[in-house]
Length: 181
Image (cartoon, rainbow, N blue to C red):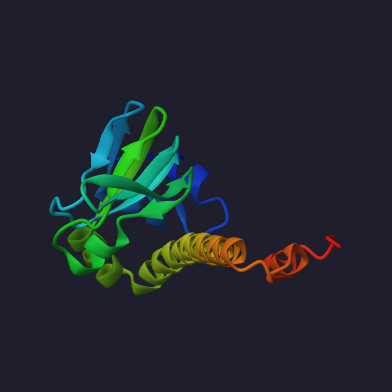
């Protein structure tokens, strides 16, 4: 169980009563991780939603021949583990504490029961989670766009090295730098 005071500081703007927060605190657990420890590993079974109370957590995935690919770094007040909570089954990412961290967990079954008891409170919790996840997806989308622009710029530069007809000003304009002459 999590202390009520821990939740009031994480949800300062959420319109919930102390009674509702207490019900939420009763179904949550806390994981304390030292820097470098895993919260969970990709492909483990999972059914929890995780909320960072303190610290930073790196979300990564194995690609290719066991090469780790950084997806993003999350901080206080951010959620992760949503796919496994909704769908159950294997976790799609690895979560590692980058610094000493405290992570709160909700189990899907207990959160569902709480939402059935008090549907208005369930909607408030899910709205909070969705808003946080929207911000995460927006950040991942921006990283993907930047990565694709870098790949395209690299291809343009590679082609320009092979074809002398591509001028530096053309490459810079494609990149969005209009200060070059």
